Length: 306
Image (cartoon, rainbow, N blue to C red; front, side):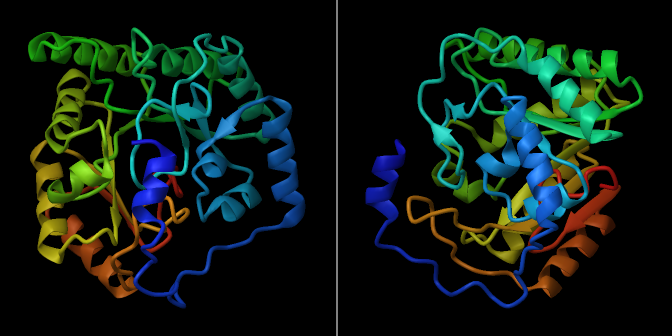
């Protein structure tokens, strides 16, 4: 579904309530914001911080960090929650992107970096090489920097389920062979809401991807994230956490969904900070090694510690 069609579907539906008082993103220092934004623009790069309108970008930029978005700024998927532009990406890949990211990492002095990408279903490898090329470029320039990857599901390319699974596993193995310090793939929401929220992805495929990642590289921690406030129940959240643990996912992030615009799926509920604390306690009790849970938590928020 295009952004224009989503506008038609959602524009008359407003969030059920104003932002509660506990959701107050940090603005950060203007000078540091300008420095990071200028650097990103200078290297002609994209960040999920900007493209996704992350509420923490002020805080993260103030700390001199950013999550780099590979593959351009246009995604081949059309998820109902995401601010990133949707459509047909340019046919040509920017082969200078990996080196530019490495240069930015060096200039920012990062010792831990997260790289993610738009979904590139149009590419033969679905963007796996975008990750491996960037990891190599960073390691060549700043070898001590630790690199976490946040990937799409790498699914598609064949109408045959068995062949598609083989291709997905091959792409995943390519990324894992580059030895990131953490492999992250977001489940985003509970099973019941997947079809509406994550168009082009499925709950079972994402769980399978995390399971396969652990089988291919058991020494690399796996991580996933959930957005809350889309209409899920407490029991559904707990079941989702259990499902993630069933595939040996070791780390999890939970944050409040914030509607980027009226073209996007509405917020149904604002969970209280006490609820996030409760979910964190439950996640730890069922075996997650690292948990980051709070209204403004996002996938790469304080990733070095979580």
